[in-house]
Image 1 (cartoon, one colour):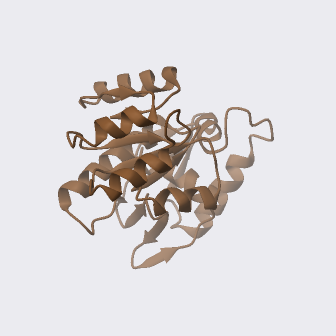
Image 2 (spheres, helix red, strand yellow):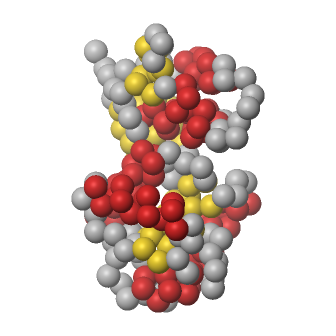
Length: 219
C-alpha cells in the first residue's frame, strides 16, 4: 500500500510497481492509511511523512504499538539525521528522501520483502561480487572489510549498485543524488566517482565514454 498525499507521485509509483508485478492500493490520508494497514492484508507499506490527518511518524508508531510488523518504507522531503532517526525510532524499516530514484525505490521494496521472507535479523543487502551494500544501515563492505563512505558517496554508489552492469548517466546521478534544482557544476559527479574509486577496488567503477558510469561485473 502507498500512503502519499501527492497524488501524481502516488499514481506514478502505483503504475510502476504494478508493472513490476505488485498489487498496489493507494490512499492519500494518514488516518485512512492507518486503518487500512491495520487490517493486516499488506506485505509492505510505502508511507509518506507529511500527510493530512495523521503524519507518517504517528501512523508508523501506531502500527507498531498495535503489534503490526508489516515492513514500512518511509518517504519524506526532509533530509537530516534527526528526521531519519525519528522515522526509524518509530519502527520504520527503511527511509528514502525525495527526490529519489524509482530504481532505488524498487530495489528497497524488494530488499524489504526479501528481509520479511527471510525472517527477523535479515538485512536488505545488495550484493555485487564481494561488494555488499546494506541499504537500510547505509553500510558498505568490500571483501572482509567495511568501507566508510560519506552520505553523498553512499548515494552515488547506491545508484550504481542497484543497476549493476548497466550504464548510469551523469545526469541521472545528479537528478537523484542531488536534486532537480541543482544548478552547480555537473562535474561534481566526477569528484564523487573519483572518491569512490579511491576507496573501492580499482576497476570496479568503469567509465563509458559519452554515456556515464557502470559498476563492472567481476571478470
